[in-house]
Length: 455
Image (cartoon, rainbow, N blue to C red; front, side, top):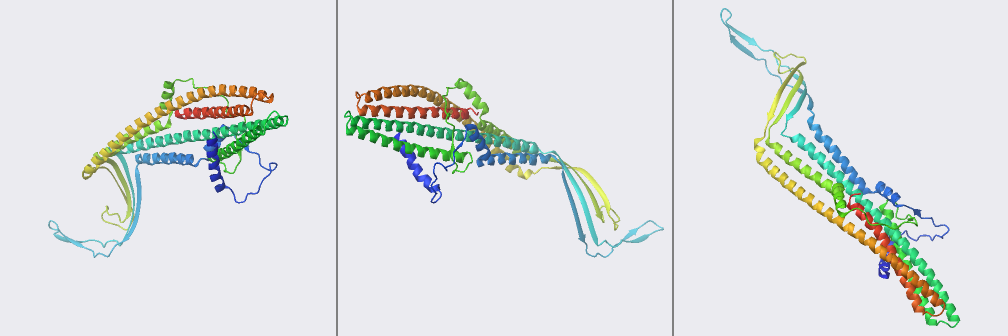
């Protein structure tokens, strides 16, 4: 335990000075701001509201929604408007000789001069009738990718919830460890005072007092390490919930009550996870998108059929004879069919690529399902083990406290050695720290199981 505290202290000494403001003015306890007490629910609310990664995933789903609207727009007719003006070069008027039956005979017909200015306005419409499922497949693909992005968003929410819960319980663990070691420091101070009294009465030696002093100093070092670990846990939680890392935050004192193992069977938890985990839903959506992409690639093998129409207003209108210097409107309507036979080799290659990507997505979906099952089993076993360990450590703490009570009473009566008293106190400290650690390990294990089943 002391090694872990030393590691936490070393980390704190390396990290905290790097972020600390230069030459901070010392603050007295009277002027120091009280820490902000946050419950787990408040931490989750702040984290969901302030997390940048979560906001990025939300924007990704909005982009996917816009993509669907873009693909659905292909069902609508294409309507275009064109307008233009041109100045034509001068062309000499032409003539034509026409032989007519007698008595008219041959006549020479002279054409009027061409018009030098040409102005045209054209409104054209094209409505798709058949595109080989191209439009339908592109819409289905966009919808599936939107559902996939929503699944990714759900996974981000689960991961963020678990990260915040883990940081919250780590802070609660550090806080209770500080409280437990502080209580042990008080007991060690009392033991030192008792040893000094017994020495003055001739019932203890200077070595007994020295041992008590050494024990007190060791506990103070442990307390300093625990306080550093608590500060680090506070900083990590503040960053996760979107608060400035300089803010002083804390958790309620009654945090971390007893926890029971889940009453649901492992089979029920696995079934729930397979239907609720957003990763699985996202993987299934990606398979659907890949299926749509196969149909989209194959659509290039079929002809495209459109209804076309236009209305033209021009001065002069080339479709009107003889031409006149005025605006004249004409219209047309028809059916257009097209197929690009030369692209068949490319279409076949694209279809093969799409089928391979579909197989890849199906395999990926199976891998994700297997990983989810393993995650549920691991979380289930870990929680049950943590609950069982907590029960055993609770009994161990009770036994250590009773042993310490009896030993301290015997020590005050002079029938127990100072080393026995110190050993009894050490056992109590170690038992309390192990129990506190196991208690919050249960909370983290519970959060991990909730994440594993998609809650």
